[in-house]
Image 1 (cartoon, protein in one colour):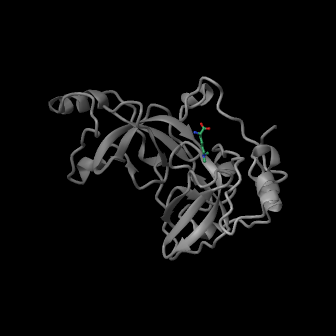
Image 2: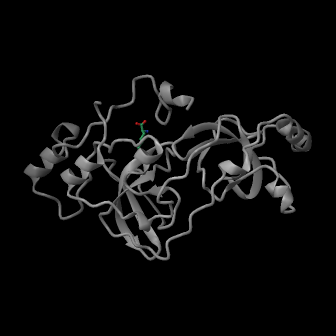
Image 3: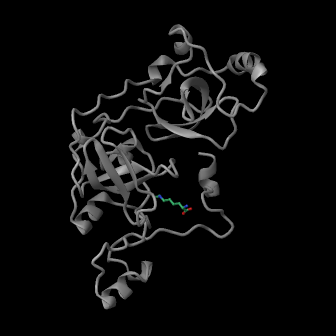
Length: 265
Ligand code: MLY
């Protein structure tokens, strides 16, 4: 397969080591994804985390769900692992004495929420308790080290999971850097973030691992000699050998827009 990414080759080429699985807040054998498109569940509103809302499964990818809050638009989908503590069976909120809330940006008048809720739940297929999995415990401490490789959610494009490297470690925080993207997508997070996975995670879950980008990191000072820099900085054609290429956006496709083939996944 052209453009197929192999960790085995890539680790050899880059002379790097994967972060050991015990570093992550992920189960060592990924949970099965037994959800179906259309199932409804309760989810924390990502934009208003004190609210519990009704969400529908609009997509399945590996051990993750693509969720859309009922009463919201289709521009605010979010992804959750099937063993996320931020999702639960319908009825849980009420059982705990809580009230289901309209999502932030509810498209109707707030006064129509009770009726909307009634209608959205009427005849709905509710995700059964058995498809929810317990969230794994957090490792006791931050065991990451600079240079270790991992797979990480691109938080600007959260449907993507990509090869990444630990760039810095500070207390319980780590800098996740995306290979081949010159820092544009890097972020800091806690070592026990649910957005980071051990090398091989996507191949176990059947999720889609993106290939690394093709942009070379801008070297930090001191700047390299001009001759070297002019060669290295020219771009993809002069990249280090063996770094897999990545196709550009098709003309006509806007930045941040999914290719047609992915848009409905
Ligand atoms: N806007 C870019 C997507 C970049 C994704 C980068 N991630 C994978 C680190 C594009 O449309 O190509």
